[in-house]
Structure formats: structure tokens, C-alpha cells
Image (tube, rainbow, N blue to C red; front, side, top):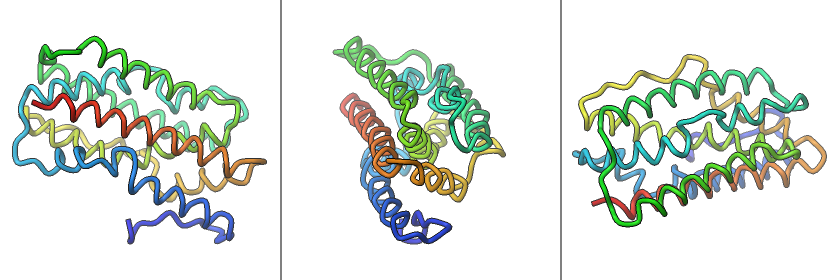
Amino acid sequence: MATNRLQPANHAADGRDVLAELDTMLATSGATGHAYVTALARAATVRRETVADIAHLLALLHGNRPSVFEIVGQSPLAPCPQWLQAATRSFAREREKIAQLVLAAGPPPARAGQTSVEMSVSATRNALATVAGSDRLGCAIGASAALLLDWDAISAVLGRLGQAVGMELAPRHGEWPGREASIAALEMAISLPGGDRAVRFGFQALLGQHHDFWTIAESRAG
């Protein structure tokens, strides 16, 4: 992260402080900071059963509409509408990739506690929807930005899982918001009344749910 830190465009001191905290969260939490995600992205081989299991769980978490971005965009007061619209369109392709992996890898392996795991992941999805639907727009934007930034690590895993089942997944949609655009959205949200606290909460909540998800996936690796 040292060469790619979240620096505010306006260099405001409070903006630097908040973005520095978010930067630390991103590096240590979520998918980005999870050792299992790093191991998967670098693995020489990944078992088909593992691909099927992760693809199935990812489909439960992020494979259905509405996405986090669609929920946030439902608010007429949501800032950065172009950023959200681009994220919505781009994330649709990521859902397609997950669906392709589910089909290619086949059904998930029958393992102990399957129902409870699926219920847990569904609860995680509901928690993300709650954060995204918050009437505190800073919270919703924080979660959206965290999802975009944390997806770098998940994208690397998707590519590796695709290779494991003989698939070359399509690149990200050309409209995928770049890091600078996400930083600008965070800055705008931070500038709202009480925005700094709301952004921190939303950002941390998304990453925390991602981290728990990958811990569940790791516990099922066989």
C-alpha cells in the first residue's frame, strides 16, 4: 500500500487523517488483508471443489441484485451519481464472472454445516444491504468505496479460480471507477455533516464483513 495510499486531492488535514485511517483498514482488513485471499491468488493449484465452494458462497454474497451500489444509488440525495452508476454497471460484469465460475466448477461439495454456512453468508449480505441503505450517506458511500477498493484482491482470486477450471475470465468493465474517483467520492462524503464518522463506519463495516466471509471460506477448504 505504500506506493498507492489514499491521498485527498485537496490536501485538507482532516481529509488526510480520515483517508489514512481508511488506508490502514484496507491494508489490514477485508479481503485485501486476509491471508487466505493472498494464498489463493498465488496458489500454484486450486482444487475444483474449492473453486465450486468459493464461487457458490460468492454468488450468495455478491451474485444477486441489488448490488451495494444499486442500493446506495436509490437515494435521490446520494452524492457522486456518475461514480455510483459506473460502479453499478461495472459490478454487473463481476456478477457475470461469478455466475460463470459457478457453472464451470459445478455444485459445491457436500460438507458439514453447509446450511449454517449459507445462512451465515446470507446474513452477511443482509448486513451489507443495511449499511448500503443507511440514511447516513457517508456510511453508504464509505461502504461502496470499500467494496470497489477491496475488490482488487477478490478480482485476483476470481482470475485464479477461473484458471483452475480452465476459464479465462473477462477483464473488468472499462467503466470500473479508478482509485482516484473513489477517493474523490470519499472526500465528498467526508465533507458532509458528520461525514467523517459515517464514512469510517461504512468503510469498516464492509471490510469487516468481507474478512468474516473469507474466514468462513478458509475454514471450509479441504
